[in-house]
Amino acid sequence: MRTAITLGLLLPTALGAVLTQARAAPDDPGRSPAPVVSRQAVDSPVRPGPGSRPAARWGWPLSPRPAVLRGFTRPEHPWSAGHRGVDLAAQPGQPVLAAADGVVTFVGTVAGRGVVSVRHHGGWRTTYEPLSPVVTLGRLVRRGDRLGIVATTAGHCAPRTCLHWGALLRADYRDPLTLLTHRQPVLLPLP
Image: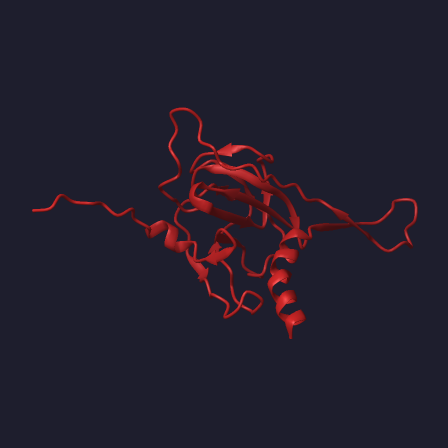
């Protein structure tokens, strides 16, 4: 039981970290494809530059505002089935935009799909897939900056094209749509 729980807690992290792309040796056509790790990650914190402010406002990763094809479904347990993000209607080649200011912490391939991850102020991280990235690892981005374009790779919305947009607060998956409606509390003076 303890092993099952440990594996359940580690499996989502391990799946996110294992990023491979199959490649066969050109001189040996009978050889089975060998995995090639294509992972780039940065663990440096987001530090706004002089005169800039931390990300406080969020925007849609696609423009114009897309239809939500499938919403967020929180899994019962970290290892349970669920839908850890939202699927947004998209067109191949459509620009994918940073939802808020941050730093690009991952550019690579996961399960054959291009993925970009951006770390934001306050422990938030957003993920975008499938896309053809145009950003590089460690790049500072502002809300609305282009991260890439929606790839023609078949995603889990096939035969439709969609962008899967995920959000995490530290290691906890959250509904990214709540970022768009999140308001900072405003303290009013006592009467």
